[in-house]
Image (tube, rainbow, N blue to C red; front, side, top):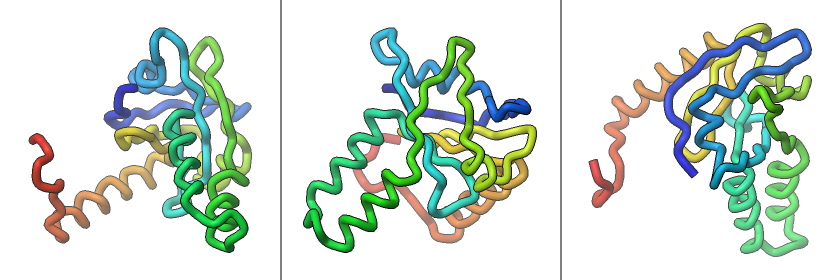
Length: 152
């Protein structure tokens, strides 16, 4: 599966549908078939986290290392699965965003798709701009770099 790159803006229609940007749809195709996605409210930001189904399944498999009846397992399972919305785009590449996720992200009539490599996010445009600026500034101030051995 390809990575999700760039920032793309699209309109949100009155029914809550939005077209997934063509480069993201291409990244979601594997061997000619479309891969489903899972939408979650971000737990860090006022946006929607979008996970390709195989990546989401890998996230869930990390729960296997936790004791099944522990509070940690229950909290993580609830956080991952209780607010998850599995979706597939229609023939035009549109998805219907659940109303509670639209409200969580403060979406009105325009949305921004922000690529994050293996996943992407859906933001209100002004909030997305603030987030990108904040992330760059924190990376600059913190002197963040990739681990040694990562190709430039």
